[in-house]
Length: 163
Image (cartoon, rainbow, N blue to C red):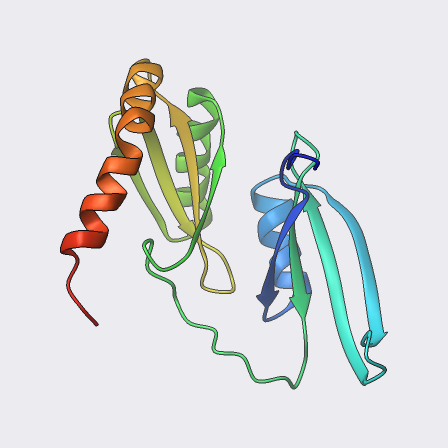
């Protein structure tokens, strides 16, 4: 059995491929590295979809599907519903915070989560994008979290409110 080696890409729907490119490539600086049109599904159904990929330094990508005329519930997401967190260094975090404010992009932060500091933007599709940098306390906090994770999950399962 092979082990999972890392993230290749995460894929999301987008309203407009050019507006998405302007945010991810133009604002965040993730280069557009691949785009292709899909005219037929694997089951032989006719379609018209654009699939685009924006690459991060480690080679993984954020990908988007634009599907004109196909119903999809785009809405402004809450951080706890759906967000994409990308790691940067502290200098980049501060610079991007200022860049977001100056560009008139919805920008929140800098939030101190003790093991990380984060800023938040909203992309043209309503998704929350978090840029985060580890603090000096991160290694010890994350080790403690790892040690306690199964116990916390088990307690949650035993005590969570029912639906």
